[in-house]
Image (cartoon, rainbow, N blue to C red; front, side, top):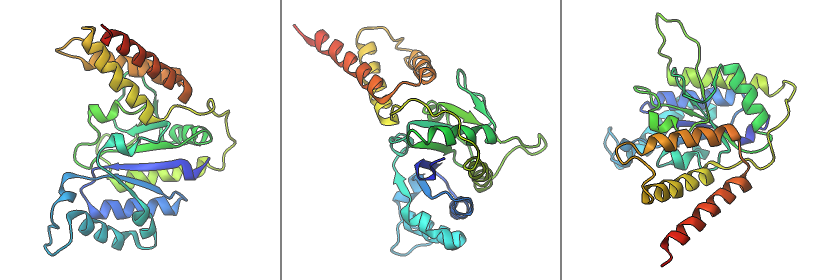
Amino acid sequence: MRPDRVVLVLHRPSSADNIGAAARAMKNFGLSRLAIVAPPSWSGPARSGGAATGREDVLARARVLARRASDLLDAAEIAPDARAALAGATWVCGTTSRALEGRPRLTPRELAAEVARRSEAGPVAVLFGEERRGLSDEELELCQAACTIPTSPAYDSMNLAQAVAVLSYELSQAASAPLAAPPPAEPARHATVEALFGRLEALLSATGYLNPQNPTQILADLRRLLARAEPTQREVELLAAAVKSVERRLRAP
């Protein structure tokens, strides 16, 4: 496994303690790349008052719990939304208790093995939802797979930092396991796939192909089809170029 190509993404975390504990767990198990999708509260003033922003205040409190893992917080990428945080990834797995239609549902150990294999070819990301509601349908559409941590039915809600610790441990174990065959060279980057679907949605809307009452359903099905195909970066670029060519022809007099 290439730990330098594995990024754990916290989507709009609300607790400074969870952020600090997550960084600490990552460092315990040899992971160093952390990204945080900033919650809206980070753009305002600190709740405790003073000159600090909400972001500065939360990260300062997170560093206290992170202790010697505070360097992960200093180096963390802060993104405005999930798409921006995942832009450089070639494969994304979301953590959720739900099954995702048309996409594999992995155990933590299966996720770790998949990350180990795919990180040999390019950056991969594991996306964690916010504490109170997890990941939304829209955020899960950005994922090629889902991972569920088995818990007791009597209390199936797991703390964010604990979930990070469980998956970080499994990832550390997979790093020393025999490596399966890597995926094709230069897998498609998340940003390129998103750019393709942005163009495709505009084109299919303009031609009347999409149902205006529910335009996302067909696009979601197409996303799953593309995810199963596991295209390379060049193949997605070719598809985007083909869509662009059709757009030009439609605009021509």
